[in-house]
View 1 (spheres, one colour):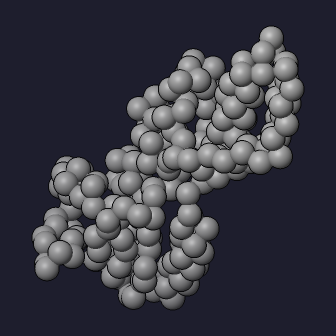
View 2 (tube, rainbow, N blue to C red; view 1 turned 180 degrees about the vertical axis):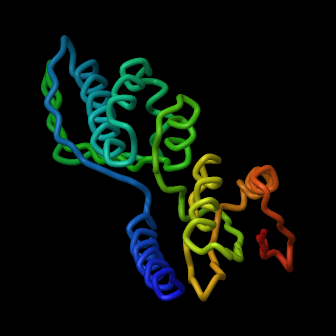
Length: 206
C-alpha cells in the first residue's frame, strides 16, 4: 500500500511540476481579423472586439466548462470583456476607408479571468498568475491519496491553485497564493483539519 501511494504521489508530483512550468506565463493567443464597416474607425473597433472574443473563447475553452463559458460570453459586453485583458498588440495592420485587417495578440489577466468565471459559477481550472506572492504548505496525510485529495478539493472550492513541490512518505510540501491563505485555513478548519503557522509555513494535519 505504501509503495503504491509513493508511486502515485511521484506521478502526481511530476505532472504537477510539469504543469506549473506550462502555467508560468500569462495565457495568450492570436487571431487574424478582417472587418468592414461604414468607416475605418468603426471597422477597427469591430475587429478588435471580434478578436478579443475569439481569443478568449479559444483559450478559456481549454480551462473551463465550454458550454457555460459560451453562454457567459454571450451575456457579457465587449466593454466588460476588455477588463479580462492584461495587454494586446497589433501586427500586419491594413486600413482602407471602410475596412480593417490585422493580426491581434492578446495576453489575458489570469486572475481577473479566474475571478470572472468563478463569480459567474463557471467551473474552471485557470491557473493563478505566477507573479502572486505565495506561501508554503506542509501537510501530513496519514491516509495518503485520500487525504491529499481532500486538501486539493478544499483548495479548488476556494478557487486556489495548489503547486505540489515534493512528497516524502506521508508529508506533502506545496505552495499556494498568499491572498487565499485566510479563506483556505477557515475552510480547512471547517473540514476537520488542524493547522498552525511555523515561521510562515502553514503546517496542516488531522
